[in-house]
Image (tube, rainbow, N blue to C red; front, side, top):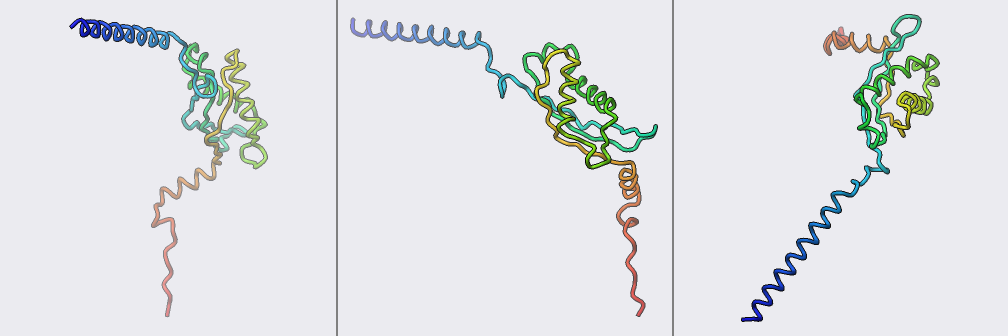
Length: 171
């Protein structure tokens, strides 16, 4: 009977010791800093499709459509006083209007690397710190006014009106 009492006390002591160790280990894990996001503490922020009108000689020449993603320092992101998406869209507009040398209509007028670097530098300059590490272009299109009018006219006519009627052979 004494063996059973000592065995029961031994089992209780081991159980209590295991529980104390596991609670201490879990508390140490909670108080430790959470692991950084992918690539050493960077988060990714995407914008919706942004349509920027291209103005030449006082008239709208076309539209530049873009969707971008940014790698952002995750530690600095919560410290911003305005939503990061709002600031990014505003800076895209400011950057595109501030660079009249960008000619979207010509094949050689749009330098992708210069666009990315310039946008990243202008955002970081505006914030005053290195917030944006990389700019990724998900979509970049230019639609001229003529292309928009052509697509609008085709959609109004419908498929039956847009195609010419087949000719009957006169035999």
